[in-house]
Figure 1 (cartoon, one colour):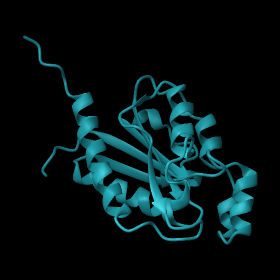
Figure 2 (cartoon, helix red, strand yellow):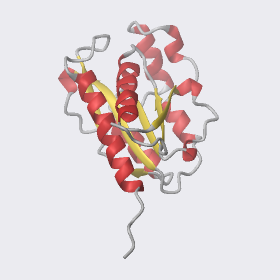
Figure 3 (cartoon, helix red, strand yellow):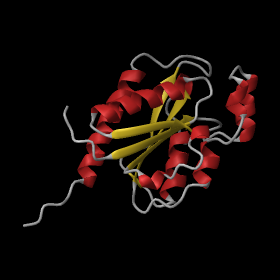
Length: 184
């Protein structure tokens, strides 16, 4: 696809065991294939970045206790085998709390979750969507979950392809919503 690069997206993610980072990379690829200019950052590298300077914000994190991680759940992840750096610094919850208002900018959220909890009533993506829409961002897609085999396991077969396809759909929807309305 050949699109002029005039739409900017920011992907911010938190990852404990690497699966959410993998999904973020795939979503980024899909957004780029859809013609968007994409900046992807781990949450600790996103401190001080103003997401309202982008047309689309995509936020993703692992589901911890049916929500976004907290300092205690990040420590739990380290006890379960995540690298110690996973518990250092702020996570998405804290980053979202410091975000400036979005004034109608577009938003999409995703999470990773284990197979046995595939259909969660609440998850990191829905909590992030709720918190960020309160800051003035507008959802372009329902919060989306990607499935891993176990807490430390790999992504389920097909999830990376699904994440890339979801990124392409986000790019298409973003371009559609930002297209100028023809006047008669």
